[in-house]
Image (cartoon, rainbow, N blue to C red; front, top):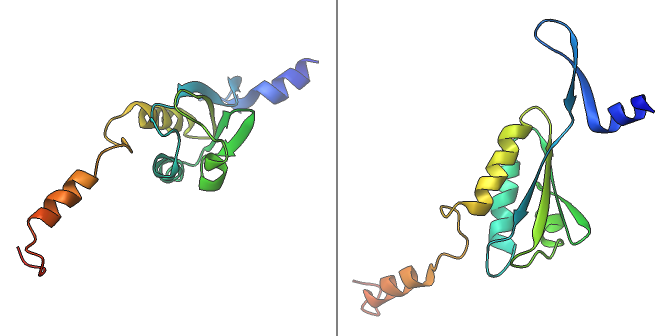
Length: 134
């Protein structure tokens, strides 16, 4: 019974002194979808690019569905709307950093997918005289 618990929840590793040690297999966190359109294509693509930078496996779970953070299709199939709680699990060598990066992606305004880029396009077309000149 102890062996089963250890194999599904902990990993046996050797510490710096050469002694066996036990550590959790994965890091977990819960995040809420902050975007008014939900977890749509743009933030999903950003999550995929983010996840691809890490060696750790990152999984998202929402609405009873699980997604690999490296697969845009599986993220989109979560159908995560505004306010949906997403469970994030990271396991691997850089799981701490990977989980922190995903958390930052959900709260950071620097990757806000709802930035109005149409205003920039309108400003550019207003300066055009209709013949491709400004």
